[in-house]
Amino acid sequence: MGRNKEFDTTEVLYRAMEVFGHYGYEGASLPQLLKGLGIARQSLYDTYGTKRDLLVLALKHYVNERSNAVMKYLATSESAKQGIAYVFHEAAKVLKDKNRQKKCFIIFSAIDQMPHDMEIKAFLLKDLNTLEEAFFETLVRGQGNGEISSNRDFRALARYLNFARYSLTQLAKMTSDPKVMDDYVAVSLSVLD
Image 1 (tube, rainbow, N blue to C red):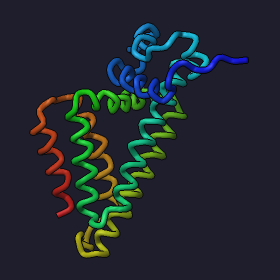
Image 2 (image 1 turned 30 degrees about the vertical axis):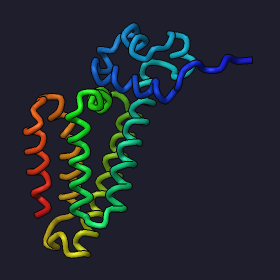
Image 3 (image 1 turned 90 degrees about the vertical axis):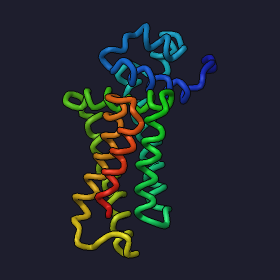
């Protein structure tokens, strides 16, 4: 009979996000991972597999959670512009919070692995395409209700908004000045005017 796990497996994924976000995939040593996760070496291997497996599981959990929230809000917001603005302001709010932003930095660990890890690359590209489509549908809806001018390339605009939202994480890693983040969001959203 196997032993019951003495830890919350989802909570460990959140801790993994923080460790990989802080040290990067290559920089996160096994002792740092175990300390940050608060579990024993055997529990890590038994539950999550290898260090790479843990990165993939934590990344997928993080990205799916974030992307589902973005898509839900874009789909249910009455106003296309307000929905898009909310997505950007919420991302900035999270990234201004020193405790909450740590999990977001896992994205850098994943991007670093993309050139030689086809599973991570395929997963992130699929997510980018899914979110681009969500922005596109929101823009089309905004055109339909008269919020957004029809003489726009909505595909290019959706792509821009998607990457601008992604790049907020890079900005948060490079500066702690909240005004810089607010300015970036304001300029990004100005493309909707």
